[in-house]
Structure formats: structure tokens, C-alpha cells
Picture 1 (cartoon, one colour):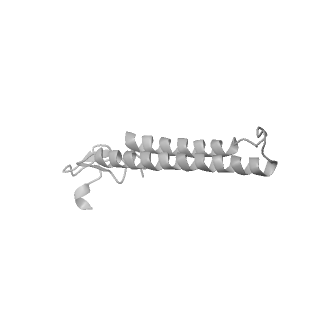
Picture 2 (cartoon, rainbow, N blue to C red):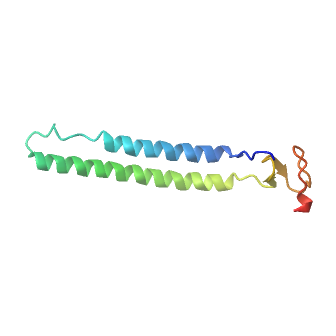
Picture 3 (cartoon, rainbow, N blue to C red):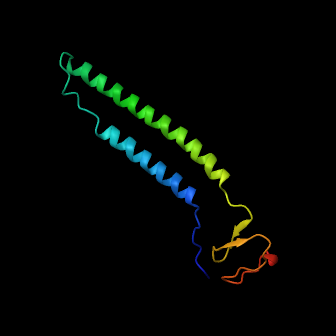
Length: 112
């Protein structure tokens, strides 16, 4: 039996890469937050609290940007969906609708 292989569209890869980059950005932003050593007149507790608030605001802004771009990419992904094609359930190749036999493996769509 032939192995199924995914035929992802280019926009699917763009969405996946965008989400991976955003996760990396958030993790890096949290991990590299300042430790509060540059606070001139603040106490250590006040300095740490201010640093934590700044990090939180930064993460919230990243999440907002992430969500907005994901919405835009999702709409573009839906609009660019190819019409009139389907995947062969046996070999995974793209077959135009209306064709009853897969050219690669010979699967008969009329029998299904």
C-alpha cells in the first residue's frame, strides 16, 4: 500500500512558520527580560515589579500582533484554497474533480 504524504499549500507553510516564529519571540522575550539591576532610585522590590509589568506589556503586545496577523493569514488561506481538486486516498496525489481514476496509482474514485 502506498504511503500517504501531505500536500500542504504554500499558505499553510506561511501560517505554520508565522506561528512558530511568534512562539519563539514570546519565549525569547520572557527569557531575556531584564533582571532589574539598572534601577537608579527604586528599591529592589519596586524595580522587579516594574520589570515584570514591562515584560507583561511586551508579551501582550506580541500576542495582539500574533492574533491580528493570524486572522489576516487565515482569511488569505481560505481565499487561496484551490477549487476543483481532491487528494487521492491511496497515494495522496492531487487529482482534478471529474476524473474517476488516479493517474499515479490507478485508484478508482467511482467505486467509492
